[in-house]
Image 1 (cartoon, helix red, strand yellow):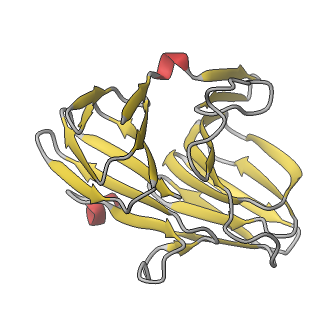
Image 2 (cartoon, one colour; image 1 turned 120 degrees about the vertical axis):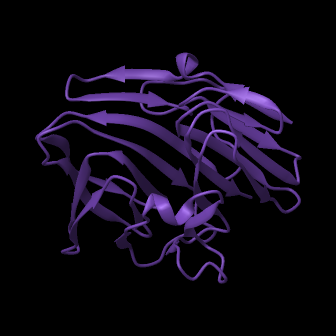
Length: 232
């Protein structure tokens, strides 16, 4: 089963410095039909104005993956971690039993990103944070794990969930295939470009919710950049 969720139907919030689009119920946006997709709980499509950001705030019991599309984001937390993640790269924060952090756009241009929350497989644990570059050229024509809870994904940032976040860049006409296990859920978004998912068309920034499909084939109609979450 494949359900396309057009970008225009997403929840919206405009705070001036932050323009947010919510694929799932979040903050003041609530849709009982869009609470989660498997263990995937949040997918926010955010634009953060220059020299603004999220002041210190707490999280717990969540795996939070940030995929930067344009610009850069700077992370700071109460554990002493600080780092900058720029376009095409990924950061992961395992909130564990509790962490307090801030995220700022210290750039002179807007930063756009996907922030993805996945429910952990096990509660508690010491919180952690990490960031890693993933050059777009290294995921040309195929899905590459960016964050993963599977032992074999040694190049991906680790998360505490039986899930994967993958990325692919495709030239127009190219296709990439991803094989899912049974009883799994996939959700994908083209950050850029128009695509077909198992023959069904989705535009840039549309959400595509997938269940009961063992093989997911994404074909690029335009040059495209695709992010996919595979979760239990």
